[in-house]
Length: 66
Image: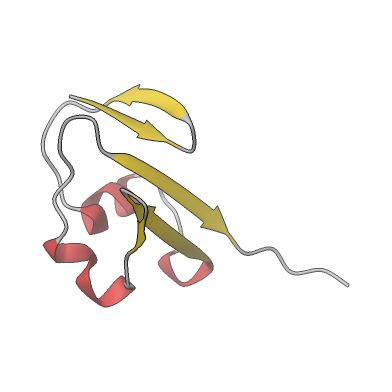
């Protein structure tokens, strides 16, 4: 299945929910915001969002500095 992540097409092998996808990428959930098909997804419902063919994800990381 092909999805677009931060503007780049990527193939994923199986259908997964957003929570599993983020976990498989070793991303810290508390440090990111995820937009799925132009809608920001609250972390509390990541388990209920299943990725499908041609979905678009934007993953934004917070970086501290000063």
